[in-house]
Length: 589
Image (cartoon, rainbow, N blue to C red):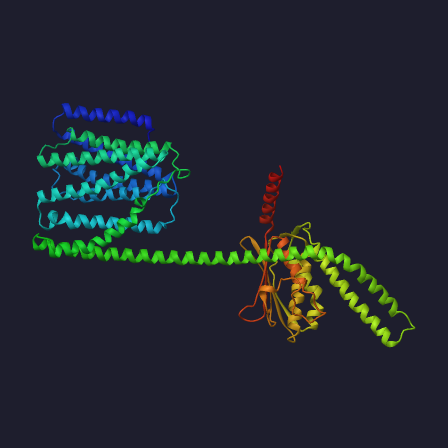
């Protein structure tokens, strides 16, 4: 069970009072040693549990921060547990050097990594894998530094006095890093995170000071479990627990938190790089300037080479991950550029259609009246029996051209008066089958084979069946005219559901499209004069746009032409329309 912050404050007072009584009236004994060591181990284990619970209840960078702190406390508990096992379990004096010193030295590295996470900042763009590699590089470097400086006097040529001095200096240097970093963040950060950093700064500073005081006491031969030196150490443990408990009651988010500026915050990858660059320098010093005995110098060179090999693997992995991330960013940029070009094309096409609609709307009515008169008089002339054959032929040609003009004007009016129509749920597969049945006779006559891939169950879309049917007929007719010039061919129609869209593809084996970029332009046609107006595909483009869809055309590598139509599924389109109606209502109100 995890206590609340207020209850823990009372427990802290009781624990510190107990240690003060032990320090004043207690005398060195097994019972006092057992009480002190077991209490310290329990406190560190409790701190580990509190930090781990914070990690479980958090997410993102905050979870990583508390996870690193809990790992540091766990390693701390292992070191103290080994110390307690020797003094309490086996009733033996702790040897000097002590094998648990290595674990105690390493436990500070996760604290350094936790500070480097900077959970108060918005989510970093740096990949999680890269951050993990930075932590591993720093961990390997600190282990190397311990092995390079301290280990030779611990095991190669044992010298307890030299080992103790080097260990204390290196440990002080290591412990000072999180103290300085937490102090700077306490000064610069605002909000609830400032309280967390302040408590951790006090706890780490108190621990660093108490450990150095205890080391001095050990060096003078004045240290014993349960004396005054233990009170500050136990106070630092209690403060670690208090910091974790208080953090559970705070709103630790990185939103609306002022982010300090300055390059000093990005020191984690720079420290990793500095660690790598320091290895050749330390190796050269061991070879050229180190005055230690030959076994120690040889050992340091071997350790340096091994560390360089390990860190080289990490550097290779980091570069590999960076290359992958760069390729991913380039792919994303290319996709964004393609989407931007497609949107730009759609905007230009819409502007063309809108401008043409405004022009045609006014002119078509004026043209229709004289065309109707010309057609009527030409039909009267054609029925006049007093005309000669030449005059009758001329009257028929006038009527033919007048009807062609009337059809053109009718198409223009239909194009100009295009408005959003009522839409209902539709099955595109059934609509395509109907369009093929209507064109089947013409397709067989033109020696065109049909290949279809239409699933029996397709997600429905919201659309107008008449408009979509006319659009499909226009695309099929366009493909049929292109293949008829080649003496026949194959028309493949494929429908599939992808993500939240329904995709329809028309692929023919004709000669392809001369200018795919202009195929949807009004009045653009490659057909002979009198056979096409160039408005059919433009009207189909407008219908697809009216259905919140997309239509594109291209010339595939295998030849022919490919028209691809993409429509949103009914559920997604309904939500989008509701959102648009709500937005319009809010603007109107």
